Length: 64
Image 1 (cartoon, one colour):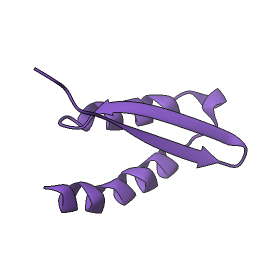
Image 2 (image 1 turned 90 degrees about the vertical axis):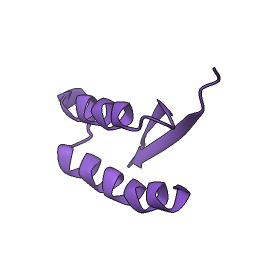
Image 3 (image 1 turned 180 degrees about the vertical axis):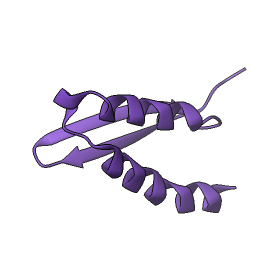
Image 4 (image 1 turned 90 degrees about the horizontal axis):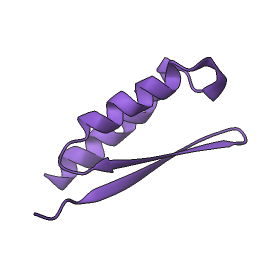
């Protein structure tokens, strides 16, 4: 069975974060984003993660 993957890039100031995720199970991506935000050295906050997820929801709904 072939799995479809997708990529999300999050750019903040001079840092770029790249996340690969299973297109059929975006929950793993959301978890990875929050794990990144939980690491102080990442520079990514939980609020910023929520903004990224909020931006992804309409796109996901359109693809259904």
